[in-house]
Length: 253
Image (cartoon, rainbow, N blue to C red; front, side):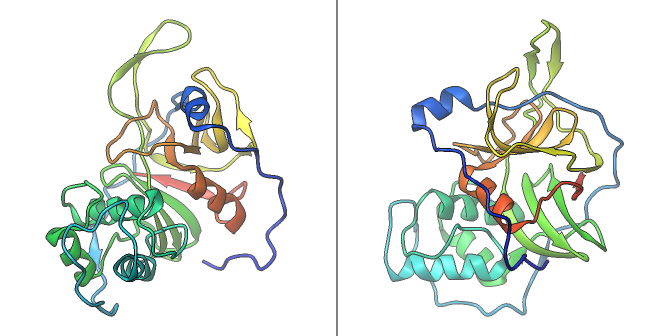
C-alpha cells in the first residue's frame, strides 16, 4: 500500500503520564456485524532472506547489534517495530509477540529457539481479502493487518474483546465482543476521546462505539470491551501514514 508522500499535518495530543494514561484509557462499547468466512491459514514467506543466527533468549532490555539484526528482520517481514535503533524496547517486544501469534507459538515476547525459527522461516500471516487497500483484524491471531490487493504490508499487535462478561454503563451485563463483519471508518478523533469506559487515544471508529485506538499496554491475549487496542505509537503511525483514513474498509474475522 502506498504511503502518502506528504501526509496532512495534525497536532498530536500531548502525552499523559503513564499512571494517568492507565487511569484514562479503556475499551469501548459493543456493536453488531455479520460474520465472514474463516480466515485462511497463516503462510510463510520463504523468499525473504534469513539473517545470521541470533543469541538465545533475546528480550526487552537487551541492546546492540543482535537487537538491530532482529529489528531489521522483523521490519523485513512486515512486523511494525517503530524503527530500528538497536534497543529491545516495548515496541520491539510488541513486534515479537505479533510474530509469535502468526507462528502459533508461545506469546512471551522473548526470542527463544521457536521464535528464532519463525524468523528464519519468514512466518507471516496471510490476508483474508484479495483486493483493495484496507485493514483486517484477525480475532483468532489477535493481529491487525494493513493489506493492499491481498498482500499484507504491515502487521501490528492488537488486543480485542476479551469474551468475558462486564457491566455496561446502563447496568446491563454483556459479553466483551468484537463483532465480525465488514465495516468502514466513519469517525476519527485526533485527541483523547472521552467515553463511557474512559478516554480513547486518537480513536478511529468503524462499528458504532468500536474503534481501533491507542492504549498504553497491549497484552498478548484478548482484553478489551470490544475495541481493537494497539500501542499509542502504533496509533500515531496509523494516523501519520494515512493507512486508516475515514472511509477505509475494516474487515473483522
